[in-house]
Length: 546
Image (cartoon, rainbow, N blue to C red; front, side, top):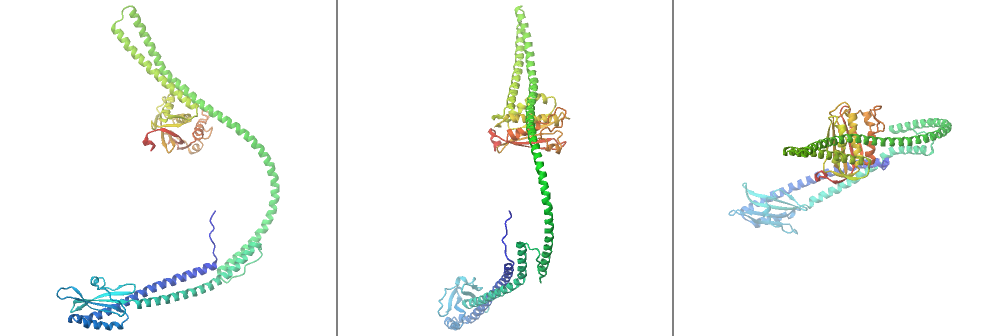
């Protein structure tokens, strides 16, 4: 809700504006004039002080030449008649040593003497103003040679009195001018606000009593006259609109009555339709959940067929090696019975037996690893409980279970994941997500190529596992991208595609893992899935955590 600005009357605004302009103008003029006047007064006083000092210095030169300080002291007493001069010092430069020495002085009656200013000759060459005194030193010369110095200390009482008197006068003129400005502002605002107040009262009457028959009188000011004319025009239109509104309200009441009857009938029909729709939706959700479970089991069935094919190969090699070993054993037994067994034959049998046993061991161990990996993947797929597991190892187990599907084509799978990353989460949903994404790439993205590339990049960032899956397949258009996670959306309709694979991925990420997923794709430029979900890290490299 916007904040309401404080209101102010036009009267006060006009008076305030006039007074502010007058005050600023007069104050500025007062300050500038006062500053210039003080500056000029000080300049005049400084000139007067220099004149006094030059005259006294000129007269003192003869006394210094004659070395007659008494005569100079008696001459300085004549300064009693001046109000400005309070203290005079005359300093003489010794002809032999060249040092400055006190020669004569003058102190006005009632004014205490001041110390000698031997050390301030240079600083007081130009007059120096204090709070109540002015100090000045002038050289005493004879034939362009400095023979001494004159120190003068004068009173600033007369200057300060003139400045203060001028200040008081200016303040009095400023106050009088502001009073005159205030009276003129009051008169000026009455000429404007009086007709405005008349219009305001008329507006209030119309607003409170809703009397739209009244009309505003003509005004002498052009703007107010335009306002009155516009207000009268508005009243005419309001009156006409009210009459039309009353007619329309009568018609609307009749229509509302008819509409209420129709709405009542339609509401009953809508309730019945909603009830049937809810029952249909409930059945649809049941069918959808059943289809999702069927999709999970179909994925597990594909894995069983693939792993069975993978296990058959090492077991077959083990059976072949064991059969060959049994044949060699029977030959050795027969030759041993006939006492025809040589050391060379026995040695060859032992070497062949060792080689066959190694083949049997390697392939049986390979079969055991495949079965163990399949067992873990199967358990993870059917379980949604938390456990600690290595992310990299889980990916390798999934890739191993999908090897029958992958080895028929030359697709490259790049896994970028810290092998030491161990987390506590639900491996089952993550397992199913990987299988569905990889199968989706094999079936759809690489439909027309056998040399695709899949990248799986996994990082731990701020309490979440960041899972980026991408391929360089044929990609999808924007229309399909927006609906890719909807159920029953597929490009293989009628070719065995159910359209539930990506819907299952979305549900596993958002519900089972409490995460989120987004997809980026363009036709011909592949596809990328960005997945994030919260996990608890059990162990990983210290540098990765940082």
